[in-house]
Image (cartoon, rainbow, N blue to C red; front, side):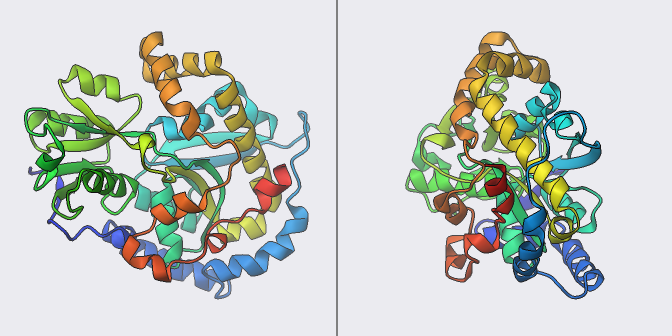
Length: 353
């Protein structure tokens, strides 16, 4: 187990995920940002600013006359959750809206800190972002990429054969307190096991999580499509498909309140292009399958299966559902959670329509 960050049984609460893995640094950035912005922090500042910015949130003009702007989006790992961004980038959708899109891989808490500081423009890990905003991070979600999980619960079949075997086992997740942690807990609950009767360890890289299960350093993990094929080749078994029973936001675009106020027209371009990319990925199966082949270096047949598993998880509207938002919160904290309209800024999706 050395080399992995181990969490003791029962202490991994979702509401503390933002602070547990580097959150103190993020708090410092929040406070610094609040001072820099004249003391405006938290969702209420965006509510005041949104009225001023709404008149500028018109869709970007079509054609090639839009000045190109560099935009960086931080994703927590390579997965099909954020694949619409990749396909939109490849197909030139973002470029046609005057956006030079740069997608970088970054751990969730680092991505949140980066958006607050301005070193990156957007972050995508939905659950971590929602909980960070609920604890004061001056961010807002501007468009949803997915509010259904396309993750799979993978196990070592020599150790876990049925639901009751999950009790007391070690489960590798991307980020303790993040979406994959909540998903793992949901699997335990589905099979009648107390969600806190397991050990959760954080391993950011998907391939390394699978390797940990194969090596016995963990007994199960949350894995992304299309890594299910790699898991099966390693002798591991798909124990549960989260999309079958758990509605959860897995990908969004969130940016800082400061960016919304300072650059509403550019935010609108990003949202409009993202919605176009979502429509494209859902409707152009052949092009999407070929892009999956290139991105993941997999046979076309496997890429087609991966696409079919993922298609309906990609948002058709860019909006989050109330159920998905609720599931992103620790049940113990639901009574004090912000309403969704304090976390999501819908003006850009509405304008794009």
